[in-house]
Image 1 (tube, rainbow, N blue to C red):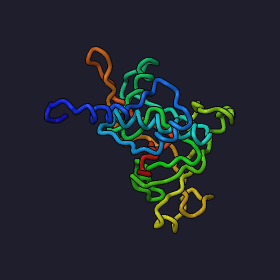
Image 2 (cartoon, rainbow, N blue to C red; image 1 turned 90 degrees about the horizontal axis):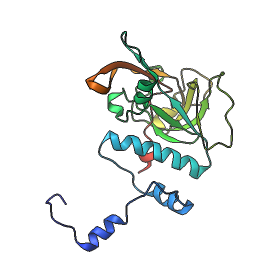
Image 3 (cartoon, helix red, strand yellow; image 1 turned 135 degrees about the vertical axis):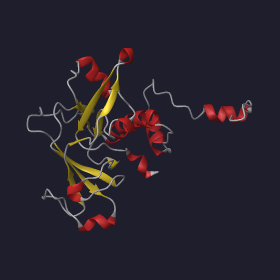
Image 4 (cartoon, helix red, strand yellow; image 1 turned 30 degrees about the vertical axis):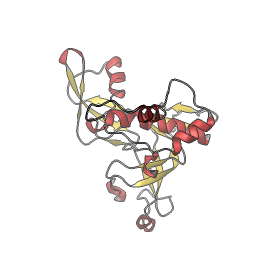
Length: 223
């Protein structure tokens, strides 16, 4: 393909057989097959979409409710963020440009994740493999339907309890207390640096993003 030559019929047929059509519902067998496959991408624009697809597919396969924490984007200057612009900000898929915070962060109990921030109070570093063990909802959050496949939270969770898979962390506990060794509470964070939302007519606005926790890289870490 890199040399610009046509593929053989056998190779082209084999390549087409790996195409996944997301416009049609998966059967249970197809869903399990996809989750057992290697997931990879070469750009954040691809990764971000795969994160969302995988979180929902895994949650459905496990019968878990997927909770979506919506980011809060605030202008750093005197600009006013309209509702239309706020929605556009949530749809930005390149996490490298938003301080590694997702617009809509999916979470479910038992979800394999990787941290994407340094958490100073418990000395957690980026890329630690963890598992979500508890989601502490905001006291004003309406009681979610326990049978719902997914819930968009109206408030940020107070904290997310994760269990670190690295055995070296088994000797430590969360600074917040109330968690067994190797478990850590991660609270809402604000990105250290602003990011730029590009609007129509070459306009742009500088924003700072706050999210339920520094976002997750989904269970692709099990590869």
